[in-house]
Length: 221
Image (cartoon, rainbow, N blue to C red; front, side, top):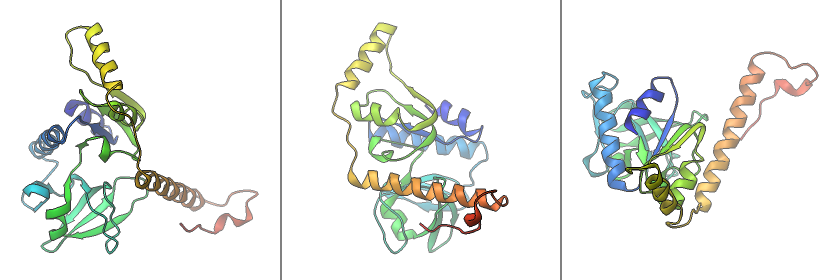
């Protein structure tokens, strides 16, 4: 899963990694961050701290874990850390909306964590270029995880033979049921509206559209 992340990340693709447990997600997150540090992609000289004293660096992919109306962040929303100051962190949304936010270092310590990988609950309503689902997930993990990637979706199982791999996959499909919360559905719809608005504004900026007299007016969301 880590190798696939770096292969696609190097090509400018956004990757969703879905793990079976929080412990597995934490291990993958720490491993990806450290490899990015080793490659010189992340600088350890400026550090913030997240949930459980997790190291947060500029350029990391993170997830906010509590709604905060004052700063405009939502639970389970994903961001890239754009800047770290003594009092706050600057974040930019990983979605096409380009939303920016600023959270306090206190908020980060209590409600911010790395999000290169997460359990299925962390990717509901999200869309990426590619999605990789790890072993031992339940039916929700398979259903949601394998529908996140626009271009590429793959599930991983650990088995000695092809037949055993198929059995593992079948067991995962029978383990639990896929569910989306109302909050996840609303957040996904809002992201789609913002993406559509941005695409229209970008198209209008390229020049006039023949036969569309109102093309010069923007839209509000």
